Length: 169
Image (tube, rainbow, N blue to C red; front, side, top):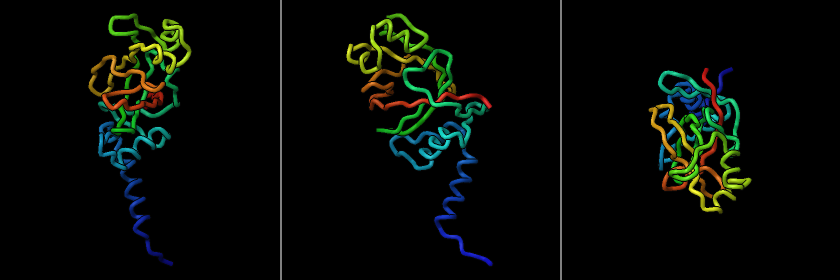
């Protein structure tokens, strides 16, 4: 017995094929357009359903990490989806207390320096603490992320970041 395939089923099959074929990290970003395919790739990656390829190396999500458990040496998938949409894979290089201040290996060490217990408290102290990272794709690095509304954020739009630790596969 044959049955007709609906347009929805065809679209779902195409989309599943898209997820399996498009693993390059650039496909995870769509900026202000917030394309459904890019958003779906981020969601699928975070769920462990797809891998991301960066410079010929494949990465997969291993575990969700909180903004306060980040530490030097971790490799993470940082994603955002408020004003713009996107994701990249970063190596955590440390935490900086101001432009000329000391650097730390963990958020807990940064908290101890400022005598706080949360990112919200740190923000309330009007600190200019930064998360220093290296972009795995192009090797650029810097203190790009700052605290906004109790979270690590990026860019002029204060894009809240969420993180997943990754491992090479």
